Image (cartoon, rainbow over all chains, first blue to last red; front, side):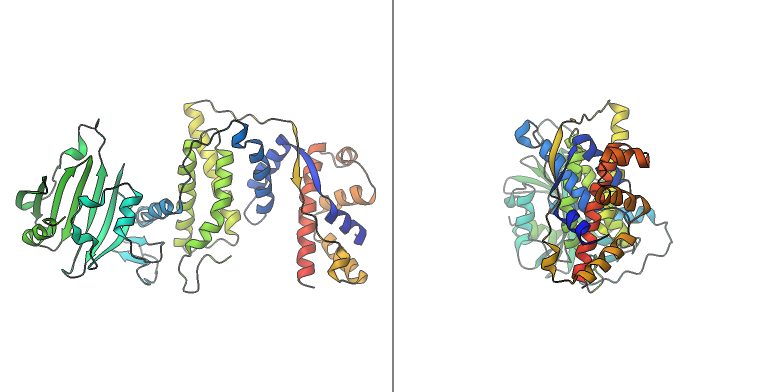
Length: 247
Length: 181
């Protein structure tokens, strides 16, 4: 091979292919092993083929663009997925816990891919369309640290917290219940050994507070199509009551 | 591309860099069932994080992710085809947009002719036998794609695609050679 051939190859501006040929190139490249795969060619093929399917040519994209935040939330349950693959009693891979990024908890590993950062509850609630004013103001104060955020079922999210002044932690689970939904979150079914149970009304909202033999205190209430379940660990009913009195 | 940062912690930024390509691939491949795009991307991400979690860092994350995405998409269509009949039609009219970025003239690279010849020989030796054949037939002997196809017993379309890939590969090798000069 000589300089002229190299130059010729370098100066070639474009090659015409049919859509089928480009599709074939794309599929062939995708079938290769990662070691052999030319990702640049794949990107090129997709860009060209997407031009064929551009929105102004009648195609409308109906899917939602998946945001990175959603991906992070999904990844927050990786520990559970990993746990399913790890038999009980197997050695958990040695992963250093650094800054709360990776936490080995009994039989599963939680990976916080945001680097252990603290969440802003207002921002999180805004993201999921949850009204800010429907939880006690304690959770917006400095002594409350939101430690993790993740899905908790269909239209439901879970926000872990620590109350540094009370040396307790827990979570807030919020679920959206559409009007046509007759069962489910409108009724709080308690499957626990209850020690103490009481009902109170705060700002016109009926709340159920109960403590369990495990030492947890749960507060359940339903308002504006949202169901709330706040779980405090190692707290008394009276202490929990004081928190939820103030919205 | 390092997946783990200097402290050995999974660096989410790497996913974000690969994400654009994965998203485009899924959007294209799943254009007939756009509701599945988010699910597939999520599955790809899960696979990626689990791989990292198991201390298996892919050498080429982008390529690895494309491979995973491709397999997940194929599985998805298998599932969907069991429920409904899916067919993706591809138009066959020509496109002229498979562009190759024009490189600057080799003379501008300030490499002597002797060194360019050495570079050319080295690049040629890195090509497969078939690639060498195609290059020789097309660029030295000025044979058409059709003629080359008849010689090497492949379709004209396949030869055209192989030649395109060959151009991309040679360009990359030239670029690496110049950078290492």
